[in-house]
Image (cartoon, rainbow, N blue to C red; front, side, top):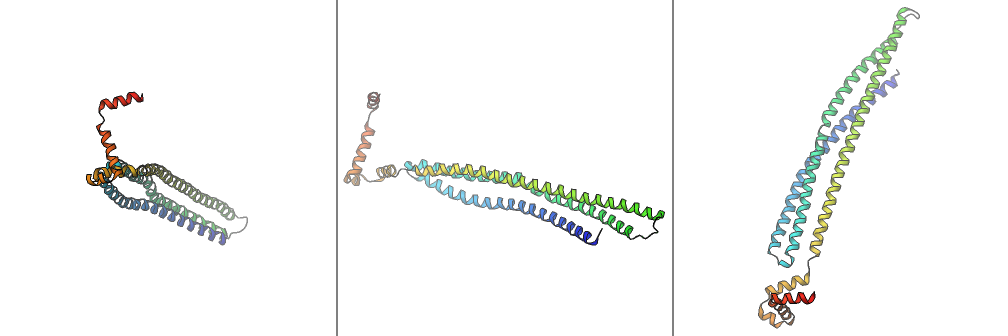
Length: 261
């Protein structure tokens, strides 16, 4: 084996070691990010709950004309936050163990790679020593050296093949876990956001269902003093209409229903 080839293989082995270390670090950072997300999500949930509680308390004191819509709005917001929390718990439960186990995997691969490299170096030294052995051509010693050289070269090739197989297995497992972790994360988030969109759509519709005219009529009828109401024809007509509706007897209502039928 030439010196240039030997140096090339040595550099390749160093790259293998760096690759294993970077993979370990990457999965470690993903796991730490999931834990950090749990903390930040908890703080965000507290703020969202504070807003929701404030709005819910206000809704109970508001007029009945919009109270129902506000309560429904708050329930939708709470459902969104509940869904976010459940999503984070699912992500942490499914993905963090998959990331944490890679520390042990990388440690094991590093150990196996080191063992194989030591065996490879031993065979390489033996090959170099045999290549430098000088003996009389055609002698039994020369034949033995040649046979030993072939055997050592074959063993060296086997060690190189084992190293390559180890790294191929490592790359395959790494890529499969990358795909599994990242695709699962995206899938969980897609479901979460689709459900959140549904709840936000409902909350938007709850607010849009609030009728300004109905609210004003109800509030003014409940809060306007009688003297002001009598001096305002529009309010007075509204009160008269309400009073006439209230004075309708059950029998009159039944007669009206019969006429309608």
